[in-house]
Image (cartoon, rainbow, N blue to C red; front, side, top):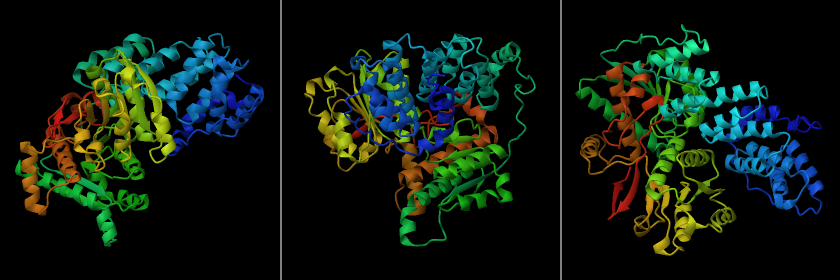
Length: 578
């Protein structure tokens, strides 16, 4: 192995540890990297860093190893330092930093004897950033017979995360003899709800060429017939056993969401599509949800909606898969919830989808002649956005020259993230964080550039609701917003919805009420059009206009909404640019 004196540095062991510990790591935000101690002896610093790595102190190890890996350090074991620094960054889930270190290793130390270990790690780093093309290309470069089981196991783990049909087809053309890729695509077609009649020829070819079980991979006709009416279970934390004003106020969004669902039920009823809503109080903990899931009647439902907390969402998603009932999460933007589960959908676009669509917009609108700058909050969802943004932008020919993460609640972290940005030579600045400090801070930095040479700024739509930002700032030239929850307040759909909501609730609808209404109108209509198992139908239906929102799209087997409006504030009105 790479370092025979300690098993920690065996990459086989490291990859297994990374995969097994990913959930726990995802819940722990990365801490600011401590400064490396000013040790005079590079060899002593290297030994100390290795000891830190052995003990799981990855941030400390990375801080000491990264300087030693640079060619200017002239350290005899610089290649080893680069590899171990990349391992430490991967353990911290700092994928862009790990990629930079691996690129350094492959560029500056091309004769490194343990380069296959680095290639295997590069494969995982690329997969984690949803750069599937680079991941497969890197793994294909491994020497024959080297890390075979690890390589195929990694592909089997990550390939099901591909959402776009074009990405599947492009890689199948590039790697026509890759059995793991072929099997993953066949799984996507047959079990992931992406199959259409047009796929029959290719599926037959894959079954024949790779000896797949024809009985297993032959799409079965839908056995669930359409009904004249449907039952929908709504599992939300109403917390009815606690009538205190604090709980009622805290749960107002749940009440609003349910009110929107009820109004959609009435609208469907008037359209001749009767369905029954059954509300279940899941409380604020998983224990109550487990008690609800144990009710026999729940297994007879045709659609499940909820819950809103992540721990409960995982439980309900598992229940939906086991009982083969489609479940829709009304609020989450976490793509991990619906990976490898054909019965689980997100009503909203995931943060990864937002990143991918925003990158397409940026490259088309701002051009790729100069590198972009990407700053994002140090959290799981924000990192998912950043990884998808960078991967998509660069896969389309652009270049992200700088990626930095920050803790929005730490002044030093913010100032470090924005320090010495070469904005005059950048194509655009992408800042992703919903924290209310970020909008004012970003504008204060961005507006220091001369107006004539100021680069475009792309930011989350939540900044539009930030009271610390002035309308004159939000409407400045070159400012754009990613707004997945955009709807036209003057549109006939929203105006009719608002009128009906006022008649029933005697107050205007909140965003949550609008989301509940749109959710049931779309998925309730799907029940009547296609029946309870409508995955394949949604996969081929294409984009559909929403009643209130800009649209819904689950094309190609996606399990989160692919419609992500990009807007600009002009003359106090939002204009949709994409």
